[in-house]
Image 1 (cartoon, helix red, strand yellow):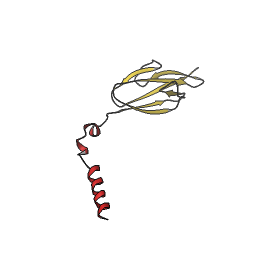
Image 2 (cartoon, helix red, strand yellow):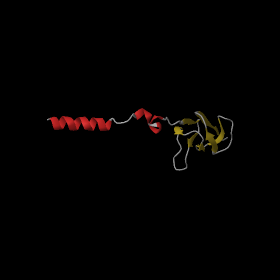
Image 3 (cartoon, rainbow, N blue to C red):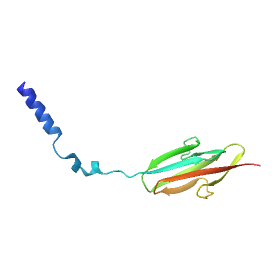
Image 4 (cartoon, rainbow, N blue to C red):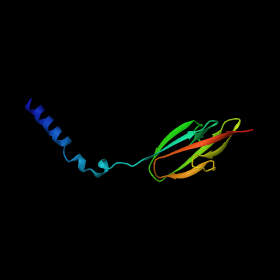
Length: 109
Protein backbone atom coordinates (compact mmCIF):
# COMPACT_ATOMS: atom_id res chain seq x y z
CA UNK A 1 0.00 0.00 0.00
CA UNK A 2 2.87 2.39 0.83
CA UNK A 3 4.46 1.65 -2.56
CA UNK A 4 1.23 2.53 -4.39
CA UNK A 5 0.88 5.76 -2.40
CA UNK A 6 4.52 6.68 -3.05
CA UNK A 7 4.18 5.88 -6.77
CA UNK A 8 1.01 7.98 -6.99
CA UNK A 9 2.77 10.88 -5.29
CA UNK A 10 5.72 10.66 -7.71
CA UNK A 11 3.37 10.64 -10.71
CA UNK A 12 1.50 13.64 -9.33
CA UNK A 13 4.72 15.59 -8.76
CA UNK A 14 6.02 14.67 -12.21
CA UNK A 15 2.80 15.84 -13.89
CA UNK A 16 2.75 19.19 -12.10
CA UNK A 17 6.43 19.97 -12.53
CA UNK A 18 6.94 23.46 -13.89
CA UNK A 19 4.56 26.40 -14.12
CA UNK A 20 2.24 25.96 -17.13
CA UNK A 21 1.45 29.68 -17.11
CA UNK A 22 5.11 30.41 -17.88
CA UNK A 23 4.86 28.64 -21.24
CA UNK A 24 4.81 31.60 -23.65
CA UNK A 25 3.34 29.68 -26.60
CA UNK A 26 0.48 28.29 -24.53
CA UNK A 27 -0.41 31.65 -22.99
CA UNK A 28 -0.41 33.61 -26.26
CA UNK A 29 -3.77 34.20 -27.87
CA UNK A 30 -4.05 33.79 -31.61
CA UNK A 31 -5.68 36.85 -33.13
CA UNK A 32 -8.37 36.13 -35.70
CA UNK A 33 -10.76 38.28 -37.72
CA UNK A 34 -14.20 37.41 -39.05
CA UNK A 35 -15.81 38.02 -42.44
CA UNK A 36 -19.61 37.81 -42.61
CA UNK A 37 -20.78 37.75 -46.22
CA UNK A 38 -24.36 37.87 -47.48
CA UNK A 39 -26.16 37.62 -50.81
CA UNK A 40 -29.13 39.85 -51.51
CA UNK A 41 -32.21 38.60 -53.33
CA UNK A 42 -31.40 37.06 -56.69
CA UNK A 43 -28.11 35.33 -56.07
CA UNK A 44 -25.56 33.54 -53.93
CA UNK A 45 -22.01 34.05 -52.79
CA UNK A 46 -19.01 31.79 -52.35
CA UNK A 47 -15.48 32.19 -51.04
CA UNK A 48 -13.95 29.37 -53.02
CA UNK A 49 -14.63 27.97 -56.45
CA UNK A 50 -14.68 24.57 -54.75
CA UNK A 51 -17.85 25.54 -52.87
CA UNK A 52 -21.38 25.95 -54.12
CA UNK A 53 -22.98 29.36 -53.79
CA UNK A 54 -24.90 30.02 -50.58
CA UNK A 55 -26.98 32.89 -49.19
CA UNK A 56 -24.43 33.69 -46.47
CA UNK A 57 -21.23 32.50 -44.89
CA UNK A 58 -18.76 33.32 -42.17
CA UNK A 59 -15.04 32.74 -42.34
CA UNK A 60 -12.43 33.23 -39.63
CA UNK A 61 -8.85 33.93 -40.63
CA UNK A 62 -5.70 35.57 -39.23
CA UNK A 63 -5.43 39.32 -39.93
CA UNK A 64 -3.80 40.09 -43.27
CA UNK A 65 -5.41 37.13 -45.06
CA UNK A 66 -6.27 37.67 -48.71
CA UNK A 67 -9.92 36.82 -49.34
CA UNK A 68 -11.74 36.27 -52.63
CA UNK A 69 -15.55 36.31 -52.73
CA UNK A 70 -17.65 35.55 -55.83
CA UNK A 71 -21.21 36.74 -56.43
CA UNK A 72 -23.31 34.26 -58.43
CA UNK A 73 -26.52 35.55 -59.98
CA UNK A 74 -29.63 33.38 -60.16
CA UNK A 75 -31.52 32.96 -63.41
CA UNK A 76 -33.23 36.23 -64.30
CA UNK A 77 -30.79 38.33 -62.22
CA UNK A 78 -27.38 39.90 -62.67
CA UNK A 79 -24.75 41.00 -60.17
CA UNK A 80 -24.96 44.75 -59.53
CA UNK A 81 -22.46 45.68 -56.78
CA UNK A 82 -21.13 44.98 -53.30
CA UNK A 83 -22.18 46.86 -50.19
CA UNK A 84 -18.84 48.73 -50.30
CA UNK A 85 -19.84 50.02 -53.78
CA UNK A 86 -17.27 47.86 -55.60
CA UNK A 87 -18.50 46.31 -58.84
CA UNK A 88 -15.58 43.88 -59.14
CA UNK A 89 -16.64 40.25 -59.27
CA UNK A 90 -14.98 38.38 -57.78
CA UNK A 91 -13.88 40.88 -55.15
CA UNK A 92 -10.43 40.38 -53.64
CA UNK A 93 -9.34 42.16 -50.47
CA UNK A 94 -7.13 41.84 -47.42
CA UNK A 95 -9.06 41.04 -44.26
CA UNK A 96 -7.42 43.12 -41.50
CA UNK A 97 -10.40 43.48 -39.15
CA UNK A 98 -13.90 42.08 -38.70
CA UNK A 99 -16.00 42.89 -41.74
CA UNK A 100 -19.41 42.40 -43.34
CA UNK A 101 -20.11 42.50 -47.05
CA UNK A 102 -23.28 41.99 -49.10
CA UNK A 103 -23.67 41.22 -52.79
CA UNK A 104 -26.59 42.99 -54.48
CA UNK A 105 -28.34 41.70 -57.58
CA UNK A 106 -30.88 43.22 -59.97
CA UNK A 107 -33.50 41.56 -62.12
CA UNK A 108 -32.88 41.47 -65.84
CA UNK A 109 -35.53 43.32 -67.79
